[in-house]
Image (cartoon, one colour):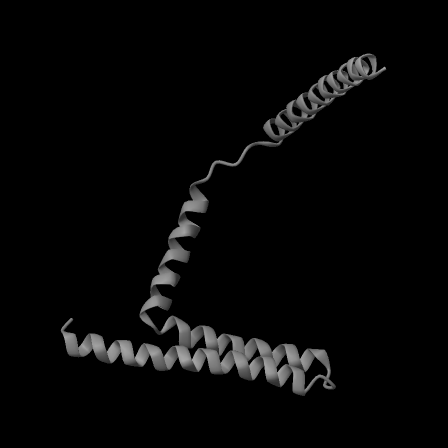
Length: 122
């Protein structure tokens, strides 16, 4: 891209982000202003305004980059190997056992140190 096209994209991106901000403000203020209306109508209008804001945001360079990042993250999540139920149960039991052993050790050390301090202090 040449410099003029980049400057034009940057200027248009700024206008698009201003539109996104204006839509968010309209949604918040409108929701407050029409607080007496049924919640269903307000939610539907907020969803429409939110969809318009997202659409305007995705039309920018950063919005497209974020959308690409979200798609790549979804692909990476699909690659994760999740533990089986048995592995999860075994790991949970190991954690519980270690916590119990450590709590008994700390209770014993606390009792021993308290007894030693009471001997010293009298």
